[in-house]
Image 1: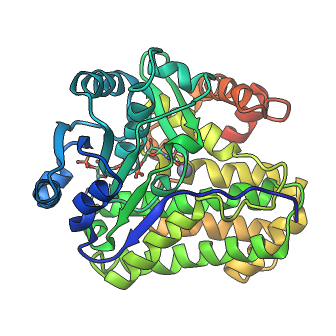
Image 2 (image 1 turned 30 degrees about the vertical axis):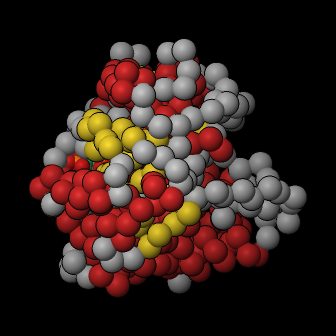
Length: 381
Ligand code: NZQ
Ligand code: ZN
């Protein structure tokens, strides 16, 4: 086990109706005026909007509304949020929605305290401060509710890049699994794929690790599969939704990678290009990339892949394990080939070029050159 620092400052409040405590949480933390960020229409349709505003009013928290965050959030809308937060002199940001709403809110929280263009922080400028962030998450997938990542797309340059900073961890995140019962089944499936992707990156790419992390990851993957097998048939099953929700949080809150060394996120690196260029859902892109990357990578770590095949699916060889994973993705109606997402094979070079820029930014371009990325993508044809 390697030395590490694990510092996760987010308070989690988990359970039925807990969104009604959001006003109290913000007041307890000493803030009085928030930028209330949300997506397109799901929180108004479900009545969540009214419950949140009632809680804010009850605790004398004033709010400025900023709706319209799109899935795969974009920098132009983020800039508008920064301008509004500055003009209104809010002292905190409240994000209510899926990972996209949380991520854009994190970027707004950073941009509001800076004279720089907020995109500068996505291309390397160090984050040194941010407004405090409070969240009520409505879709289990990204782990954004308990991590320091924010992913935003620059729609002009087609770059889907991220901020990673201790300053953007939410202060408080409220997780009410009931809220996820209305997530459409396609997005539920994409959330399942995303949570699996978050743990397999470290599991396969790390240089060395310890049995604990392996067993944590295997348990997370098995729980994602078991709970989503239920959710696909019974979308309002509270036990399955709640167990999956916490599992998705743990999949990317630093727990499974603490003590690992030299791991990286190549599946995410390539997927971010797919969703930057084609605006497909992140989990859909991952369901296409993961089996392709595994086929390309498995002979470099045969023992790891044999273990994965055995522990997750009870099959004996690496190839069979990858096939089982792909079959499971298909069983929950996630796409597994580029053509399933209407992405033409003759665009592979262009996608690879886009991904190679991110590989460079992440410092993994020694392995992931444009040619290697194209080779991986050819496994997804
Ligand atoms: O916009 P609304 O109307 O709210 O609709 C959303 C959206 O259309 C809808 N939705 C959310 N909660 C719902 C609901 N519909 C009904 N009932 C509910 N309770 O679902 C759609 C998708 O929402 P979105 O927030 O885009 O999904 P997700 O949570 O999967 O977030 C995806 C984004 O997060 C990034 C992805 O790249 C992508 O941009 N990621 C963020 C990470 C992080 N911060 O750590 C890590 C991930 O690897 C990922 O990159
Ligand atoms: Zn992801």
